[in-house]
Amino acid sequence: MTDVVIIGAGHAGVEAAYALSKNGYQVTLLVIDKDHVAKMPCNPSIGGPAKGIVVREIDALGGLMPRIADKTALQFKMLNTTKGPGVWSLRTQNDKLAYSRSMREAIEEIKNIELVEDIAEEIIVEDHKIRGVRLEKRGMVGCQAVILTTGTYLDSSILVSKNVTRMGPDGDRTTGKLSDSLRANGLRLFRLKTGTPPRVKTSSIDHSKTSLERGTEDFITFSESTKTIRPFAEQLPCYLTYTTEDTLKIIRENLNRSSMYSGVVKGVGPRYCPSIEDKIVRFADKERHQIFLEPESLELDTTYVQGFSTSMPYDVQEKMVHSIIGLEHAEIEKYAYAIEYDAVDPLDVKINLESKYIENLFFAGQILGTSGYEEAAGLGVMAGINCAMKLKGEEPFVLRRDEAYIGVMIDDLIYKGTKEPYRLLTSRAEYRLLLRHDNADQRLTEYAYRYHLIDEARYNKVKEKIRILAEDKERLKEYKISNDQKINDYLTSIDETPITSGTSLFDLVKRPKVRLVDLDRMYDLGMGETIARQNEIEIKYEGYIDKAKKEAHRMVKMERMRLDQDIDYSMIDNLSLEARQKLNEAKPMTIGQASRISGINPSDLQVLAIYMKERKDADK
Image 1 (tube, rainbow, N blue to C red):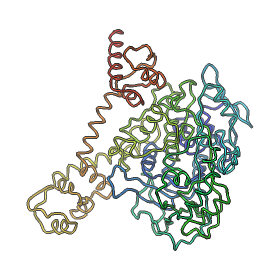
Image 2 (image 1 turned 120 degrees about the vertical axis):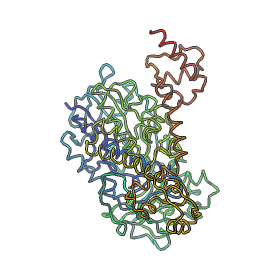
Image 3 (image 1 turned 90 degrees about the horizontal axis):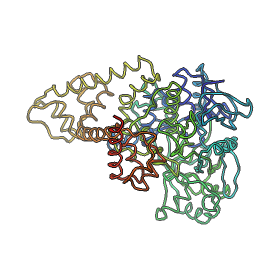
Image 4 (image 1 turned 180 degrees about the horizontal axis):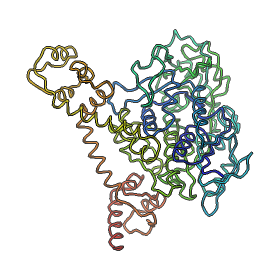
């Protein structure tokens, strides 16, 4: 008997287990192979647009991914720095072997997590409540709750051309019997598809024909606890190259041999990470496509061919790879493939990531229709916390859309659903200026402390940082400067107009090209780079941030307008037929959540508000 069984030790599973362990629960974490804990079967990188901010949020919530990502990074790169701070995002290229090994070591150090090599074949349900799991080797294991984090292993098939092989990523076993068990218990499953590109021997690449892509020299990390990283001089470069006319010709001539275009693929693939043949078809006017060459591990002579996912047969893949600039003589170490797998309809899941139909059954990661390690890890943290809260009999932990990208993701999945692998994008977050890389700890540390994910020392450190930020902002308002040569020389050097009368440093920072880190050094303010950079963002974008906060406050009011969970929406007069159907399916907890369901219009929301008022009045 254990408290919780987590099926799958990928990026979602390890975070869920860690969060539960912090709350004192005994966890059995299942994995097919212990050497595959938090495996990176696709791109060995963490972060990127929106995703990098999710990793910062996971750090604020006390998760493992940020620390392991920093520890095993081969390169650090801050993206989108020429744009506004709302879209800045860190990305690391990671050593995939070191990452998995480090995550396994971290998990095995935790006393109340038992890492078990076994395959789940059946969930045991009595009276619509989890009672246990039947394993292939151990047989029946009783438990209070189950978290499904099966990734792309749930009844998965590898697709290469017209060949379909029932297996998981990299030839691992799959879990077909578990899919049958889920269906037998009334869960709706659907097929999704993703893919991976070929890997080539690094030593066989002609890098002289490609463009060097270095990282960012500044000390920027995912985790606030990271003190040292791989020195910039020792970080590995990536390289940029392109497809050619020959690449396009080869693909077009063999399109009918691709799994996707030969009718073999049944699942829906990721819109924002398409295969190279899909790019050729969808963007027929483009003469070439970017390809990034990215190292996989210090222990391997392999390079990941980013942007070249395909399901073409091996002989065609050889021609395709050799048509890329710099890969004319490249040796393919591992061929590309597509993979199909089962996922659970997220519309059948509550906002706390628990099944609507089976009590104490939770989900996280690609089984909920997401794509990417970061989305999976974020959901894993939330599933672990909410499973703990459910077992304690406490209220669920729900992040609002203005509080975290993780909140945006869960809200999108649960109330809008998905028919394709869901990928987080900055454009999905209407409050992205509030959800920045730099302020994740301030947004979420209070929750992390409340849910026992961090200790008091770390909590107090963040509170102190918040106090210092506020005090330094006030200091800048009070610090007056007059027309002096030092400041005017600086302003002239950055093409800003010199001052002719007294002003405050606060107002000076509002100028586009003025950097607070420069003023910090010039006037010996003692802020340091971290505080100076964050306050600069807050000052420069003050008007936009205030506007976003006001809009978020209006949304919070709607979120506080609760909807009873026993409502039969089909019985409410004046609701549209579509609204009745969608609301009965989704069972939103608030009018704010109802407003984000596709097909719910403003008049439906007004009807709901009036209905709830009349219902409350009748109960008095």
